[in-house]
Length: 182
View (cartoon, rainbow, N blue to C red):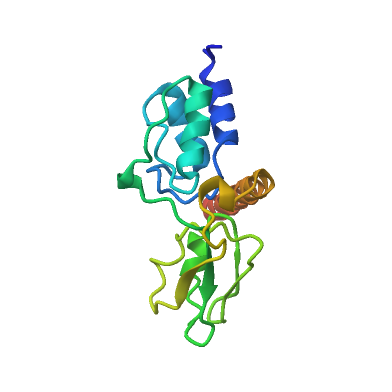
């Protein structure tokens, strides 16, 4: 079956992605990557969290051959969990700002902690931390890709990401309205 509506195809592609929102594919989130694959501007082997199984799922949907995960985007690995050394945390909030699913709890100049059930293992909180207090620990043993992630977890991560994006848009709009009112 050939799908000609790129929006419909993008939705179907997005449904096959693990929704870690990690940006390893080269796109800001899973949805923009799915849209790029749908229109042919991105290859279907750029999602390390989906791993070989993810590439195979996308290849089947697209009617293309199974190819290797592109090493330029990363490697398939056990799913990690961010862990914050609370004794080193200075409360800068940079990790919170970087987390695409609001899995980090804390406040300015307060210790932060990771809500384990929400963490997708994206690694995005690690780089901005000025005191290197965040470690990514594998939590799925040797299970990688879709063996380390479920469709329910992917859907929950997508919902958390979408809620975060909506909240950020509301906050940005409110700040602009306040600035315009001055």
